[in-house]
Length: 200
Image (cartoon, rainbow, N blue to C red; front, top):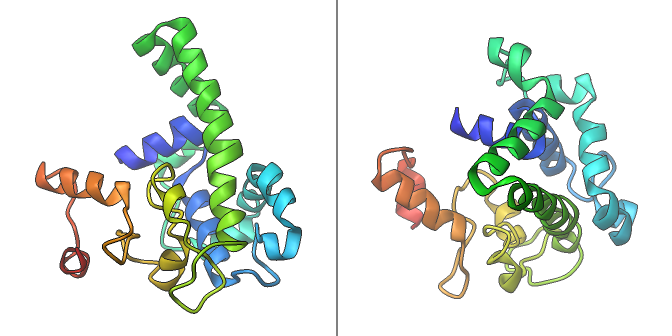
């Protein structure tokens, strides 16, 4: 539930939308059908308009039905999470309450600029354009960038093992999100599947 709320407050998306677009990208990676491939659309189009491509695909009911059938819409989706702009407004209001009006507004603008228009597009754009390829797929690892993208710039690893909660696969790679997941597991907030725990 916490992740659903955070997704809604920071992006305005429902879990079905994010999951469906992500799964479709994995199904058609860098070929016809991929919603945001720089190999098909060009690096700069994905870098500058990634949020548009994500939103456009998330609005397609066929995409949601085909790629997120296991995430049926529930009452909370209908009453709360389907109102994306409300989530963004509440997220901004929460930051303003926590940090003060100007600091909260600045934090949301910074989030939009850095995450929505720089880091997320770099994962989808540069992550399918340039870097290291330890596994045979069309994505790339950019180790330095993984520090600021929560490990997601170990994108070649992610495409090789899409269900793994841990992006790093060698001692020279660092996945900050895996550290957070392990802390949450130690606090008994989340449970790590046995296979994932063995990989750590």
